[in-house]
Image 1: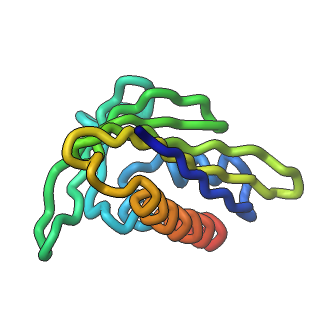
Image 2: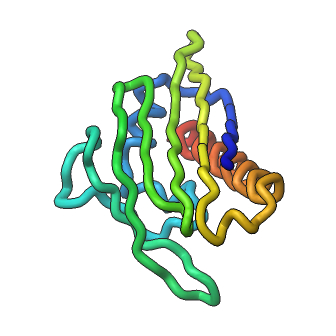
Length: 148
């Protein structure tokens, strides 16, 4: 059992500008509310197979390490990642489409395969939570790119 969410926003910036911001993983804490620190393993470029390491917010003020792997990169059009989400597996990505006049249609998609104990969570509620967070993230990405 699994689900997919999508969040879409138009950003006043070129696809290259949006790409530059999103591919700078050190800036992910600016728009991802659970990410405290982020880097690629060994400073590797963002390419398939690269490990993206994060320090993430935990419960009650704690933090924990987590990692994802880059699964696809098509600069400046799309990037995708895969990794654990609790006891489940997830994939997510960004797709950029130039609209002309310096605008970029930006899509974030997330796919979750509910596995293990997380199968007890009602999929609809979990999907709503992920949708709310990704919608907030997209607004933050838009604000950052548009502010230069």
